[in-house]
Amino acid sequence: MKKILIINGHPNPESFNFAVANEYAHGALDSGAVVETITIAKLQFNPNLQFGYQKRTELEPDLLDAWEKIKKADHLVWIHPVWWGGLPAITKGFIDRLFLPGMVFQYRENSVWWDKLLKGKTAHIITTLDQPGWYYRLFYGKPSVNQLKKSTLEFCGVKPVKVTYIGIVKGSGDFQREKWLQKVYDFGLRNK
Image (cartoon, rainbow, N blue to C red; front, side, top):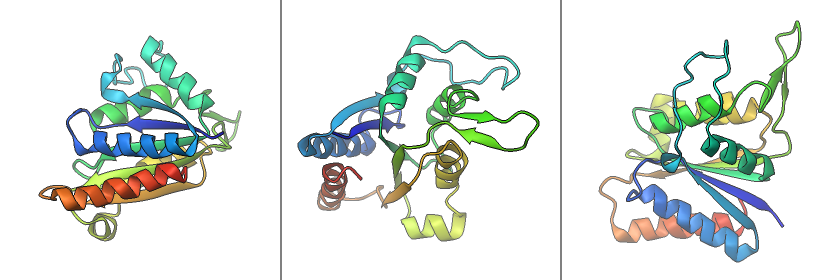
């Protein structure tokens, strides 16, 4: 039985991202998977990595709980909008505070290399855009995907990492949104 963790990075519970997260969860539950969620905006934590890596800031209880969910999961589903080409600030803060040396990666002594401590996990990034996905990839170089997929998840050993772009969300009608939600439900049903 696959253990799936859905991490919702949108701060607004009335956003389309919450509908996306719910549909993925419904599909995954219908497949028989075990599903847990993290709604980053509901967590109580300071998103600022105040001392960088020079001094460890104690993790708040909500971050400790999130870390336990990440450790147990086989498959991580990240859902977030693209704002100014990147992740929402609260999502970036969640990563900064939780994806720490000794937890998700470990530098080797006297080396530029590191150990990837999240090996064995897979991921799917589902991101919403107010532009076509091809435009975001071609003209902007997909910075949020590069950051989350390459510089975070793959850096820590998560592979493969699938990416799905949903857009243009702004101005989309009910028919188009239902098509996207059906697609996301199917991803959940197939545990992708």
